[in-house]
Amino acid sequence: MALLPIAKVGNPVLRTIAEPVDPSVIATRTCQQLIDDMLETMYGNDGIGLAAPQVSRSEQCLVMGCEGQEAFPETVLINPRIVFYGPAQVEMWEGCLSVDGLRGKVTRPSAIRVQALDRMGAPLDFEATGLFAVCIQHEMDHLCGKLFLDRMTDLSTLTQLKEFDTYWKQEPATVI
Ligand code: ZN
Image (cartoon, rainbow, N blue to C red; front, top):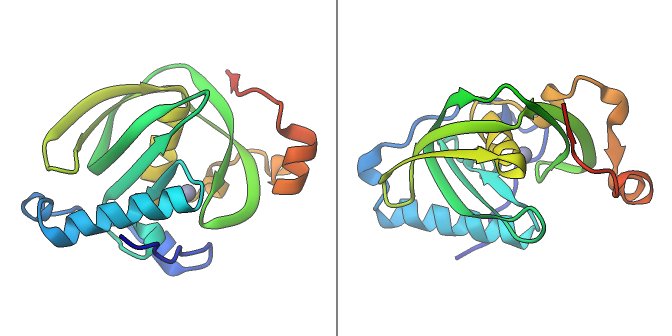
């Protein structure tokens, strides 16, 4: 296990389309090590999600997990696809381990259906809502070279962390 260096905004790897993972290599030690290192890097940086391009690996591999009020289970998604978007939208504050010190409001579909492979290469097909759905969409954006900044429709909500804690922390997520 190792903490991996995180690519920050401006690094071209964050703007590159990630390659699909060959399912036959998922069970290999190299791939399992990458997944374990990504999980450790995510938890070690207090993140709730991390995409392989954020550790300079341009591959379609995501890890996520969140404890607390809006908890969702530790999840590994390889070659994920969103096959359905629900009609309702949710507006949430997002931040990113590749964008230090900033948060901003992003509006996204509040329910999605996802197909992917799990960390053993077995097929997954599930629905996600709320923060879990937002996190999956944020992480999947990293696989197509997008950052939450690109998804913001109102840049006036861009906020530094100290100001977020002072002025905006108590604001609930808004469902639109
Ligand atoms: Zn991110």
